[in-house]
Length: 413
Ligand SMILES: NC(=O)c1ccc[n+]([C@@H]2O[C@H](COP(=O)([O-])OP(=O)(O)OC[C@H]3O[C@@H](n4cnc5c(N)ncnc54)[C@H](O)[C@@H]3O)[C@@H](O)[C@H]2O)c1
Image (cartoon, rainbow, N blue to C red; front, side):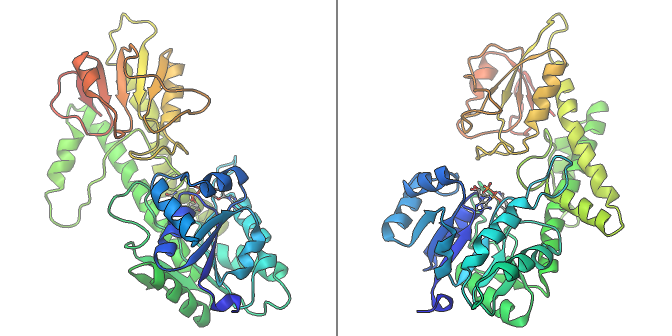
């Protein structure tokens, strides 16, 4: 059988996006090779231990035992694939500008093994033009000479780790390809895995839509973070206001305040948009403002928490509850709690943290909830965190998650 006739999928990158995609494809009848250049992760996955919360060890082990899935650090295994998807990180560099080095290296390393008539899809989030300007020239210059035709599309992943409702299968997938033949191949592939594939006219539309989706969240979170500060200064509970506004049946969507924004997407993707705007001679001022408002939140939260401590305490002890960037995951990438801890320390506080899903964080280790503190900040409400025992010990809590109501000693952000 030719590679292009096989139902073999190679996925480059086996993280929060790539591994769940692999399992969804296995469920849909594909044989999947999960390629990752981090050898320890490949070994962990092949031993049946899942590195991501959304995939259980049981599900992973079943896929391994069936022979439908294996992880590999060897890019040459992509030669048998009829579809190759790229799911590697697209972070920011030290200047907070797009860092496409991993995407570039993934394309470079897999290119020599791309068989004729293979479909190559980028699922990584990036600015419009990434597929056409970076991935395609790289692949075209390095692919085998007899791989005359390679199909290309962009289909940005929308997965929301920890989400119990929306997953790879039932979340509509945007698909934008470089030509009709590629579009037909890409739609057929995603329709075999997802309930809905949405066809758009170009890869750039798909890439831009992904940036719009996450920028929409960033600016609305910034709006509500600013609004919350205005309400708090006037003695109004912002959550009650949001609940009240939410009774309007149209034209309003509730967002909640918090310590800031974190993770690999919301704080990062909008900066791909601001960078892209500058490259085109424009400026995304509104987005830049939203970004800076969210970055001010950790300082505001630190101040609000320290105001709850008796002024006679010279070195307050602060316990941060939840350091992952959102509930249900152990992912601490870009967590705003990092800036929160820095601000608390800068104010002279002694800071400890507790998070049942995080083993170590920035070189430090969690404490138990018994740790004696003057104030606790509920930054991320993790499952399995017994807040009640702090309430019973009458510890002041600043709740940044709107999850504790009508309890003495608990102040809402
Ligand atoms: N995590 C999310 O919630 C989410 C949601 C939607 C889209 N995305 C986007 O998907 C992409 C992947 O994100 P992620 O969260 O899965 O990242 P991740 O860090 O969880 O996983 C990426 C994997 O790629 C591997 N890798 C890095 N460079 C490589 C290379 N050159 N060759 C082979 N493997 C390589 C890493 O070892 C890692 O295992 C990013 O563009 C991200 O913005 C992420």
